[in-house]
Image (cartoon, rainbow, N blue to C red):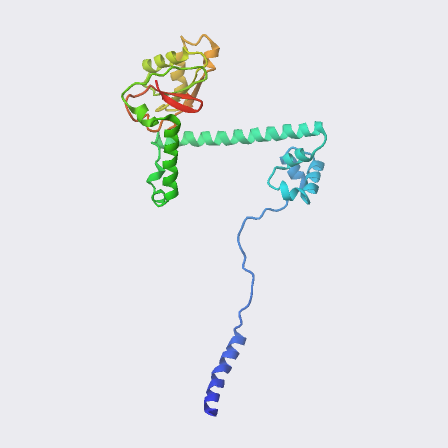
Length: 277
């Protein structure tokens, strides 16, 4: 018995000494992340085209009540919300509106540039079918959403829109004021497209969105349109009813690949496609 006790003590003592010598030390692990340093009042005022006293007022408000409700809002919007003087509030509204218009303009400008570069580098590409991705095949929710959307379209129109538009049987449609005709054209489509455009504009109040497919750039589509309007547009009110747009594969998905070739005109009423002319 004493011999066994000595063996146990001999095993325990080295473990105790080892644990004391190599005890783990707690240290801080640095984490690389983005840190937003405080912005001086002068810099913030210059950015938002405000006075330094406006920024001071904004900071005072945000230290208490504002941080619970308006932390996600721009300083100029917060100042406009809490301002009681009507004249000063109008100034804030004007400044905010100008800043928003500039922001939207810059975003649209860049998005337009991206689209132009995509067309130049890769040309007109076919509509991408996301349902072909493995993620979609393994996602019952995605498949169910697509099925439900098709069912809603069928219930709303009373027929399968794509089957009707792609069928060889022409549909009898009467244009009404307020309708929009989405006209698909190509550089080679001259007389037939021009004739269809003339036909559509006979009905007053009908707007036309011309989608150019296969044009080298926007200028080429403008030249195509100018060749049509030289002898036709004597009334400026007709010109106001026409918009030139880049080809949108979503609008013509399932329609543009089937015969007949352009011109293809979809009639849209109250946001819903009724058929093709």
